[in-house]
Image: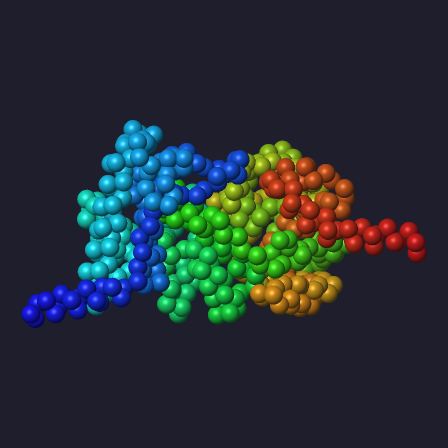
Length: 440
């Protein structure tokens, strides 16, 4: 009698549990045709429980035309591309469904709250696959450590990924959202964006960059087989103010000449000025001017491989850049470097001191968004100077001098004409002001 009551109580307990197990074919578009792939697509288990969802690759593939969407099984008398019968595939699907249900019920009977990772590992074990899955953060750490070495990342890139790693852990801890590959869906992205905006105080442009970095990792994890959840590919964030960058800070030719010819008594500021102006005359990034060696100077050009993109570029020298090279040609620097380049952080600090001394005081209004809120802040231009201003100055003045965009892109290594479009919008008012001089 006691045993019967216990069994009945257990059955009533199980009946109250809310879970579901379903099978679906992966929906993914061909990246070239943008059409849905319908041949030989993976069959996935979707197991929903306690507000969570496990996505599990069953190990089989089938054509859309051979799949019964209502019954969630392969149609009778059909075969996969590998010649496996519908009977064998459907039997395997039934086995998966039975075992995942048993795992969940056993946990609840013991008053346990299973995680997605636990159910995945236990299901793999019971299906005969005893390899333990790495956690999301294990894979992310693996990605950072391996890719940073094989792809020779810059310190800046490593810092970006480590910062994003910290953000994700902070998000998981404060928002109680367990991050696993199967939990990365539209809900995750919406909550993570809100967290970055409201908790971290990030601008929309910063959030967009972080999402780009995050998807870079997810693409790698998918390619390596760690991730089977492709819903992230369909997520498109709509963050105001990220379609283009209206805040391109650069020196006009008049400002550049003023800085170039400035008499400076402090040696460290003089050297910072020379390195910065060299970037303004060549379009080099900080990472490339930092690593520039005398062996990269070939006659009247610079030949080098970029640190960021690994592109081989040839940038012709002009009178200004050549004069700066010649100024330091007899001064030895460590690793046979061309110029006295200090750390990026220090150089950014000294550039503001230099700009203030040079009285580069043109007001600049920075426009950015936090969520839907538009924010405008006005600064003196010297307050906004950084090492990257040199590259922007080069592009802006080159366009102002009517140098073709294709030639500029060959120097800078840009491959997307949309980048140039942003600069055209910036220099148009400047050209108008120059033409107005004829009206005076």
